[in-house]
Image (cartoon, rainbow, N blue to C red; front, top):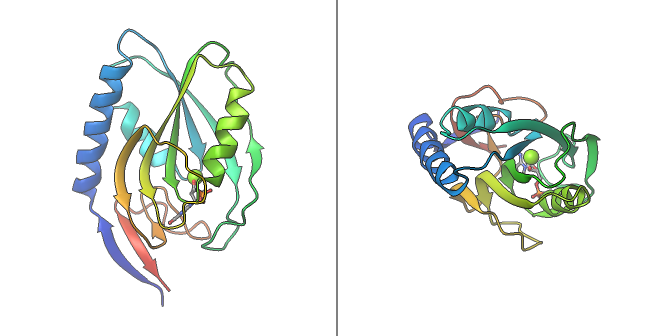
Length: 172
Ligand code: IMP
Ligand code: MG
């Protein structure tokens, strides 16, 4: 049986999301950014984050896949759902669940830059540095976690555990 070891409590997450929302609201005051959530993992984080913002935003989603059912990246990113809103000349804030190797984020930044946005920043629930291969700058980080495969609060392992309100290390 896989073991779930607590890493971030519901309260830890609530606190960090509120803090990041405050920072984003201040940095984007008088602007209306387009938040681009990266499906599926970021859907819980995005929905909590937007309800703490004090600025108007628009929401869009993209979906990338690189993991399959394994707990390590395949190294190849594919886009299974693209943007629906025109981001040309707009301020874009990418909302990611986890930045791990950085491969997905680098790919997403290249994809978005092709549409000519005014600016692109990144917000991630977890910055996991263990397997970083590409040095991508994450502008807003809720939590830094050194290692381990994480599940819960939107994060999955083979589509399981997304519904858990806290984040756990999945020990197989
Ligand atoms: P990267 O390309 O290695 O940076 O990671 C790409 C994606 O893999 C992330 O956006 C997550 O959706 C997923 N991922 C990375 N680490 C974990 C984890 O610990 N748990 C669940 N998903 C993860
Ligand atoms: Mg992701």
